[in-house]
Image (cartoon, rainbow, N blue to C red; front, side, top):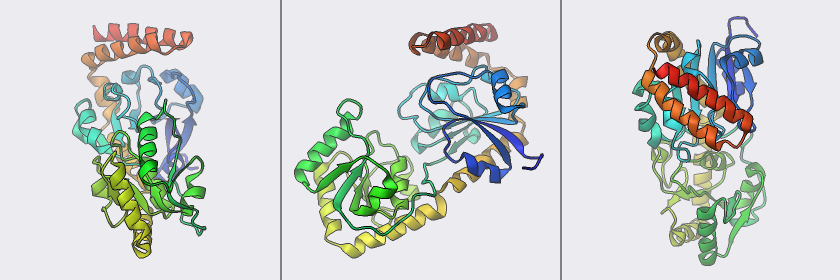
Length: 336
């Protein structure tokens, strides 16, 4: 790799990490498989040098980066689960930039940073998801975990749908292997989120039946062209739409082809890497780290102090709790 590539510390999930190299970055991943925290010095040691930028890619864990407001490099948060964690916008405000998966939450994050520093970055489908020929073993298939304790809304909806459409099948496993085997693929969006399953199902060439939601779904896809929608949590509408699709093979094939073509043209990892890289370049161009260091945000420090006190009480790990308490004390001093 060329020496001119910027060093990017990629903390958390993998996502489209490898495609960032084509955008001018040398990427070092610091995976998070459980709660933990990195200081600036620890990040530098793990990377073998001071990174030019740090990107935290959402792992639905407690805050993993300490002293963010003092990092001498560009910082960004790639946020996926904003519909689950209400504290995310507050933490995101400590970063220079933020990319948000759900369009409906962009305004909340922009209020903490600034509109020009928050990017809507929708989900995508990995390149391995591709159409393939397979015997159709299912009329209507949902692929995913279903548990009355961990996914109660999903469990309840599938139970009701199964009563009015007995041909419903529920499986766990690889989308790429299972979805080509169904006439109609079912998606569920418990919290109105435009989830990865939409993109992955279309990339597999499935005829997708998905809830009618917001969060930018109708900006990226057209109902009746790329997929078919049903009223959220309405098992009768879902069953009726399934029967209509099963009775019309050409319509299913047209949706499958159009859905795949749309995802393949605009919603692959390379597309998301290009968008995030453009956002990072904007941050470099206007020297966001320099602006942040020149004008410390005392109100932000005070708010972050409360966040770290909360996690010190609730993280369940004595060593991590001690680090969070130390961070809270430091932020108290910074807030004055």
